[in-house]
Amino acid sequence: MNIAPITTNAYTPRLRSNSIEKEPVLPSAPDRFECGHSHDQGEVQPDWGFQGHGLVQEVAAESLPEEMPEFFRGATERLVGLASQPDRWKARDLNYLKEATAVDHFMAYEQIKGHDLPGDRFDYVLMVEREGINAPGQPPKWVGTLPYKVAEQYQNLMLDFAIWRNEGQSLPADNPRRKALEENALLSGGLLGHYVGDAAQPLHSTIHHDGWNRHLPNPHGFRTKKGLHREFETQLVAATASEDKIKERVAPARQWSGDPLNWGLDLIAESNSQVERLYQLEKDGDINPRHPSDEGV
Image (tube, rainbow, N blue to C red; front, side, top):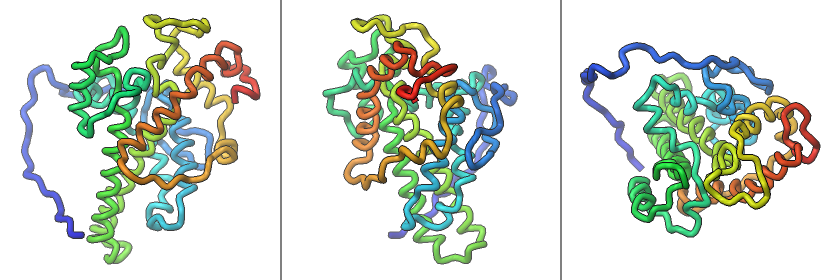
């Protein structure tokens, strides 16, 4: 397999007068989390699951099989450092980047369950608009595109590994070209880990992402007040999660095959199956960050 390097012509874009002309102001956040690696990920919003993403990335990186290239298996620190990178793109001042990528972090699975998803993300957005399957109270785009992002980022990583094997693997370990190709793969892998982590979080898979949707029936009297998302993925994780506890519960690795879009969708469906249970745990007080029960943890 021969893959030619991609080249572009440099140019200087002209920005409209209302475009960003200064560095964005990002919200502050802790520069470390309690796990095996203390790695500064920059200033990211704490409400976006900073610690949880770091733990997910670390446990995944340290569980890689030996068939993975050595440079990748030995780069836990770098992969952890990328764990919350996509959440940095949500900074309010980065208006173009924020609007273009925000929908990649979730999918309201209830709205698309039973529909055949097209392979093209833009055909999918048109389908949502055409068939009126948007979430109640939300514009069509907020059904979300997370499984598409998982598939796209997986193919980025697959391509980077292919280029590394064809153009970099035979070079000396300290060759700049080889190091650059390895860094490309680490970047793609680190970003993929973020979106897989999102897909594993039940509140990223549902129309009830931050309190039960007030536009829908609520026969069990689940919480509708906002703030649950932050309490669950940030405060509860900070109070209870550790690398050792997570490793005890990690399931055996699965060998995926077929269409990567289906992998992303399967992850979303699995997470969505836990949504009502999560809300019941919240109702029973089992996942209160201040005093969670054994059942909730």
